[in-house]
Length: 398
Image (cartoon, rainbow, N blue to C red; front, side, top):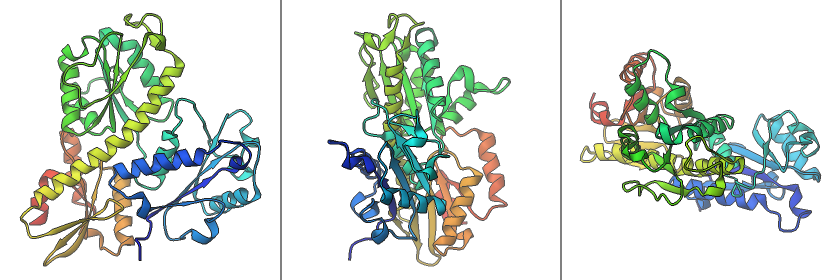
């Protein structure tokens, strides 16, 4: 008997039967499968995709479910009934439409109050929609943190433009001139924000890496296994030596309003949209890489300690101790939050583990000391402990 899928996605696309060559669902499914594979999950055994043909017969009511409805002028009764059922249950349904103009005429009435998403030619693989589904299923954290690294005298206008574009799309963005409160100690706060980020965007202008700060930020990103989206300009500037681990995107003269070498020039709106799509795709891979780093370090710390670590399809770890039994460990990307700690306790309850037998592990590199001290204080009061992955041996032998 095969493994039971852990996650269910409902993809509803009434337009497919009307539009030759349609198939947004197929593209979204392919992107989801790539992102799950990057997380170490096997889509064939952990993902169940439902549509109008199998929703009522193949759905498991006890498994997580999230849905996307691709709207348009044609609406099928079967799709509308499924949407109504999911909404009545309080389930997540994301409406995706060709244009937000006339939104209410393109979706069932049950979705009319929902904030919809517009299809974009700059995101043909639907990375943004896939990210929404992954977040809803608990496979990707809902906070979307991006750190921008740049040299002010060469790239400030583009940095500010990207900052505004990402903020408008529900990212939290760190930009040195905007993101640290007055009176705060700059460098510790900068490293803290980077250690909590999902992605670094490097603006690789001609002399960016001659800046000590930019060079250190890229080095720190690599140490964290943080993905780096590298925007390279102006032509004929090539990527800077030492950035070979970054994801390169070469910007051309036609991508700019004005002369690319002019620090006051900005990107065209269409190019900004592409940058956001690149950020979504790179972020997914970055989160997978950062989580794998935490898991790898955790397992390394436990080598030779007489315990067995089993990685579950959900990403949870089971630590099997010969005398203490099984403890559930939850690796996270970035820094622990109280809402996440509650979620972890709920997960422990679901799998029948008393809360004190579960813990959360995270990478402490770069964390602000006052934040680390606050987590230690919380550990005195909360049943679920937040454990720096470097402190595993202390936890194993209290």
